[in-house]
Image 1 (cartoon, rainbow, N blue to C red):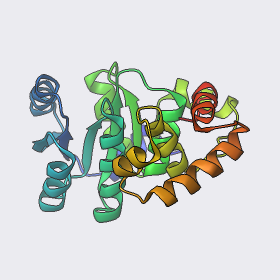
Image 2: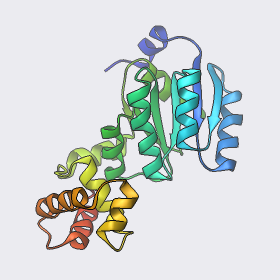
Image 3: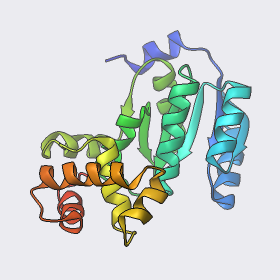
Amino acid sequence: MVESGEVLRTVQQEITVLVAESDDLDRRAFVHLLQHTAGLRLLGAANTRKDAVSQTVRLDPDVVLVDLERSEDALGTVAELRRRCPRVHSVILTTAGDVAQLRRAVAAGTSGFVTKSVSVAELREVMLRVVGGERVLDPELSVQALLSERCPLTLREGDILRVSRECTTVADIAATVSLSPGTVRNYLSRAIGKTGARNRHEAAEEAERRGWI
């Protein structure tokens, strides 16, 4: 593992940052915080996935801070940034994350996953470390993930099970995830088999109980 002192010597002194936060008050707080933190330079702030991606492409920050409270949009943002801006490091901030969120965030390509309880100094250290090439994950959740059962679901299967809890029909699920009903049925069938459930409702409950979604 790279020690923090080594990171400080190997990365540039000033880290450029973009904030992706949908809540106006939280976004303003982050902007104020980053503007007054030595060693960090705020390049912009976005309140939607589309805006976050377009600003990242245009401004090329070192780090994008992404709020996970709207989890689907946040993880989609991270995945899209990973595809379109592979040099940029995404760091997810969450109020109260869980193992399932951590796993999905790692699968999406995040460089960091930390709670909002971190101090300013700790957040700056996280950004220094990810720019230096490390992946920084919440230690308590990481231990839980290591101790818990390996998730057999693919990222897409987990997403569709998660969406299925809010949708009445397969057609509704398909419309939400932008897939055909037939494709959704295939994913649901595989997820049901992997969870040992009798139907999609039981599969979603079992996956949630095991911390897979």
